[in-house]
Length: 96
Image 1 (cartoon, rainbow, N blue to C red):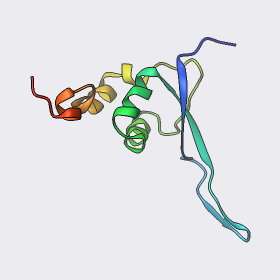
Image 2: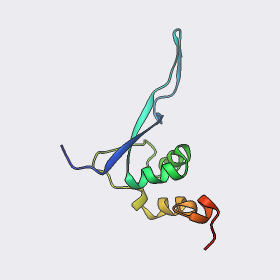
Image 3: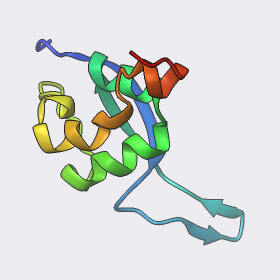
Image 4: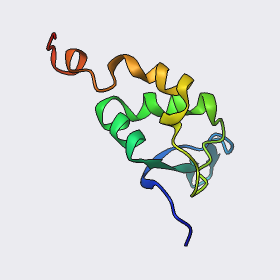
């Protein structure tokens, strides 16, 4: 098994397969997206839905190769998530 930094999974709407209506009811396919520790930390301190929306801007198909790098290591992505990332002032109202 190859080494991987992925430590968690997020389930979201599949970006390729739309919801379809069938006689038995609707079918909606989910995409499982692997996340690493830094991404998981951001998800836990922010929002799963917002994180996935931002991730789609750099990975529209939400692919998760097992050996992929962290999206948090991509400066434009990390900068968009940075305003409240690890900020005590935003998370808890503390001022330094």
